[in-house]
Image 1 (spheres, rainbow, N blue to C red):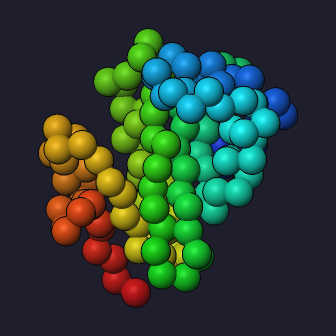
Image 2 (cartoon, one colour; image 1 turned 30 degrees about the horizontal axis):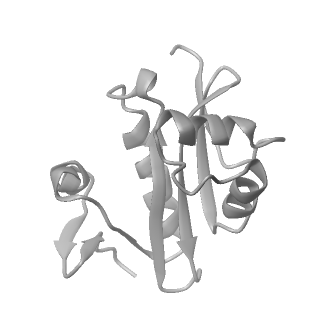
Length: 134
């Protein structure tokens, strides 16, 4: 993991995104590489994490670009978890929102609330949000 890099540039092909989703057991909808390409390209902002040329994590923001940005699809390959990659992805997604005056929000399972609270998010009605100065 010495060659970690982060980018918002979409990959040339999306087979590695499909492999990541399958490694995380996230492909219950049987998404194709075409579906994943459309999903990523239609997202407002995406961060991809690579170990050399291998995709090891990613996260997205879906947004109107004005008020709210929903952070979703944040995942790190099981072989790379607990190494700070997810935290770095979250920081980059949140930072992009804040720079654009967009309020980052997310939904998560209860067991992940403490993780997101450490990143500045707080529980609200049915999800999590991070208050920012606008």
